[in-house]
View (cartoon, rainbow, N blue to C red):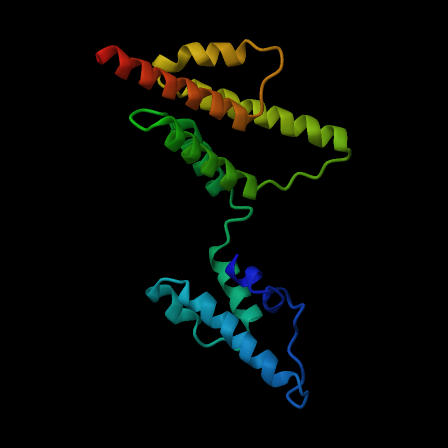
Length: 185
């Protein structure tokens, strides 16, 4: 994100290819190339970064790092994330922490999504099915005291989007906490 935010992503994608040493733009390219490489190496742990200090271009460095550490296509990573998502439950966490923990795993799984759809209708249907699965997964692992709100959400003819489901559960939990506190006083 930092490299893209600085407008230097072209150094990793070869959109900013290395000009000839005699080109008047070479010094600027060289400076920016090493700046990107520095950002990348400085973002690594010390024991890893020392192995990447001697590449001459940011693209070359990026390709070697991607080759070593990219999990795209790694079925064992997808399997591990799927297991993690199934094991996450609210437990002692508040609803917000529980939801965002789940959401992070879902985002990691989405990273591996490489579906190619023949039609927009199929893609939309798939997205709705995945969203419903996330809603059911979120609701299923909430603590028992939220069963009432889960039943109300599931009982609707059309399910709300996942963000609205989370907001409704969070509001119910907050109201419940306020009412319990009120009952003590």
